[in-house]
Image (cartoon, rainbow, N blue to C red):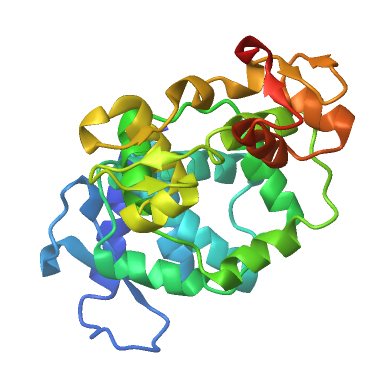
Length: 298
């Protein structure tokens, strides 16, 4: 079937019928671009014709057959048919509408590629989300989508810079504590936290020679997060921060511990678990030389 010939004849008849009509709002007629704008049609009087809503849908359906791979035309008719389903009754079958929707989505994706929202738009988006909470179903879906997704080095650096100098408020700390109340951590998570906290009880020497009893004190002075300061110590010696006793600070949780009863524990984590004494307290006892000691110190 020659859809192009049908389209051209139909447009010619409608132009002749409505050549003397002046378009006004509310007259149930709409302007149609004979050569669609998405394929370069001009916005001139010669390229416009007045059509009723039903005629408009009809000619756009013809255009989708004349230009089957043109996403802009598909996008236009999907908007029109959504309106028609609500107000005029269904005019496009589900199979056709599904194909048009696929084409229009692809067209919108191409238009959005490489474009970034302005700062004003970003601000509006942030304000719109203030006070809203994602449902449990949405959280699970986001978690599933992000699982195993690698984070680029550039993104890691941006995240690190965004948190530089940030210190959570007392209210924030309280809210985090309440949100985790009653939750039980897995053994794997406990070990990870234990490894991270192995740094916190060790003394830190700053670039000016000042000695801090804990990493938190050093962070408060440096105006950075604990993870940032640990990174400086491990990877950026030029920053001037170092553990006062690096041998004890690095890998301390893996060193064998001798308890007050002479029992040997494989790590400080095992000693804390079996003796019911916190790791922080055990480290203090080791520093003071009482009750507990590293096995290689004897």
